[in-house]
Amino acid sequence: MSTELTQEDLEKILPEDIARTFESAYHVFQGNTEHVEDLLKHGAVLLRKASQRFSSTQVILGVAVLAIGAVLLTKRAADAIQEHSDQEHSKE
Image (cartoon, rainbow, N blue to C red; front, side, top):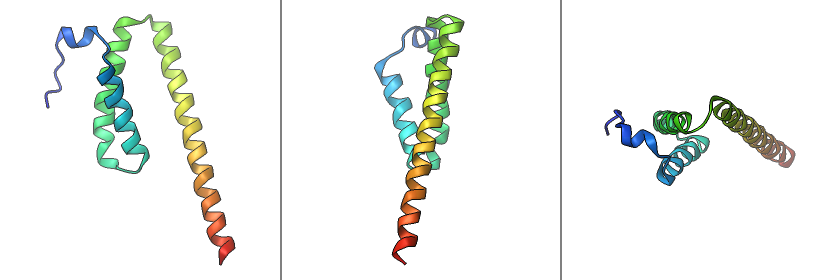
């Protein structure tokens, strides 16, 4: 797969770009660490396209919203793991 982007590729944010990024993120979230490279690549393409279409302020706010979402999802996942662990220990 080529990592070079043509000017036409950079002009439009396609639904496929978003889908690939979320799919890669889902795989990484599930623990498939071999998809980290794909997530970085797809996320970078999406960010590069967004930075050309939006103002700097919009891009910064968008990244901040994504970071907050990632923190909240990580916290939620950690709480679920802790709760599951507590249940396993209480059964013993």
